[in-house]
Length: 135
Length: 100
Length: 130
Image (cartoon, rainbow over all chains, first blue to last red; front, side, top):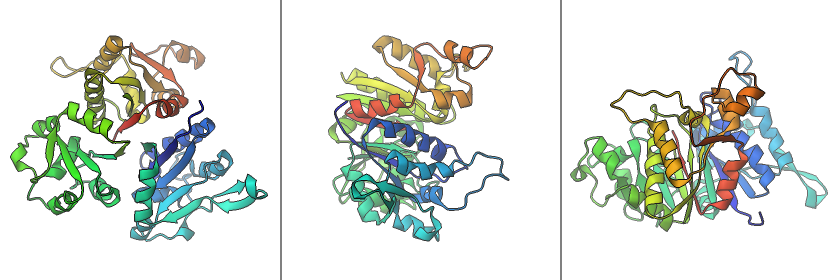
């Protein structure tokens, strides 16, 4: 397949309460093999997916949050988080997992994957996409 | 770009989020419980009335009928389409975003 | 125009599968191509032939099967989501040591790559869910 499309995975659900975040992440990881131009967007309660220190041991559920750290290795390194959604929930970027990727074109420099963007910027990003999947 | 909303605005923030992120010139289609967002004289009508100034808002006819809502209960400017109209909107726009 | 459709909720609890079906039917009636319908999350429950709704209700699973046979529709159930929820075909049953299968006619079980491929190959991908 020679055609490259811009894929955006929009995440609007918090983790654990429903399966959407967990199974959505599985789609992103599998989809990475297709070498498309991929990004993720975290809007509304979706920002809770990136909260640091998730520990599901007492709830008896699978903790899939470490898998977000693997995204950089799969070249999924554009994770757009809506600033207004963070603020509405009393969160800041410091509450989020420090996700990074290594830039092959810049001597494998470690760079942050999370980019906090305004609602207006998120709106522009939506318009740029070819395919949008929602989780 | 076509945006679909399938949640009642009384239960979910999906419609609010959609309208905050949709650009002028977008098409908004209310389906399933989303059609309640098209009701005139509701606590959320103003949000849709404002959107109508820069976007087109549609409601899915079969979902209105299923919920006992006649077209005259809709905010003026909200257009009713069938599933064929849904297909046409999805074709006419370059992509579809479902605000689930 | 080439469409693909993703169904993320099971039958009966949520309207998503009904809307997806009506959309797919309308797209086909208008002369469009439907490249694939992909079932994910609880949407995989649309693919069990064990469904037995009351006589006076629609049979959501049969409806999909019939549409598939009429239009050679490709109905794909995600294998990972299906395994979690007990939707199995004969191969999967054998592989996982289960005593039976329940996949409905016209559905096939395959990987998530089928969804990404649908996104790449189709002009439009529509998601129906909760």
